Length: 406
Image 1 (spheres, rainbow, N blue to C red):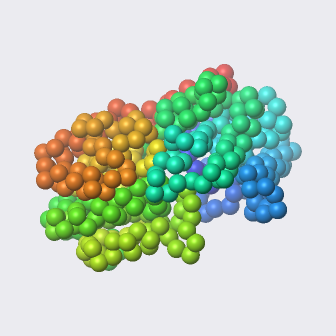
Image 2: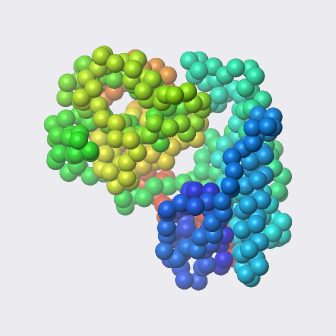
Image 3: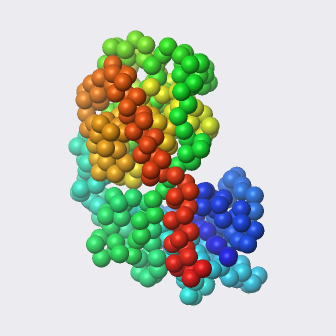
């Protein structure tokens, strides 16, 4: 079969399914993407360049749609070049978030499309205005609704959708949900797995070393920002470190912004660390930035306790990996997290925005190694039952067969 994938940041969410498909010599895998350094043997990349940023001379609520339309044109141009060379895919698979797929139905009419619907934005009840510390001004609410223009245009293609969690699917209007099939994502259980020996030897990351006798608390986010509860974690540090002199903390994540508002001439990390400056032992907290995947896994395997915080928003891949590694998890008591964690079974739930409760929960779990071990076993058991990549790939292939008749 001929598979055409589309994602502006190759390979995006499609790493595992693309790797699986290209291993079969009967398959031809082509991937349309923007330039990046990523590479996969056997996958032909077709690169497009946007060549512009959103215009400033149009209404703010139109910027996302205008840029998506421009991106859709560029992807369609790349697709027409493929078509001119005789390429005709059996299925098109891609992410709807940036508008890349919108014009491909015109290039290859009749070819089924399986599009990733990641999130439908709301002005209340989800991430927006969830945190009273950062209320959204009324005049910004039309901008939130405008983020759904690409969602609506993608749904109007009358093609086929998928999303990985119930929370994400149910964020969409009822009339749209029957167009979006649930295809859960997984974790590499052979790579992300418990390693009891990890706590018996020193772990060095940069100039920071965790000794076997240290109690390591880990926290991971793509970027250290309020959407992933960084402010709550930072404010919990003084009490945790004061009451546990044997504790060290590694907080993985960049200084940029993935979700929500940006600060002018500052980062969220610097803002909240300045708030607690002088109130905690900074020598026991390490910020390595974003780390390679193998180091990320080693940290999870060594972790005595892993904190995962989030607004009611799309759950991070790191949550799945932490469960697969058998971490003792303290996590946000919000719907997207409850889809993965049952309180007391494979983690402990805590309010996202309450640093006092977070520190209390972390300290209680550090004092109860038997409970922590039970949670580790529960985390790995959940991963084995629900998160295997093989299960994810099998479901994806079954959906492809349904759409192609293959």
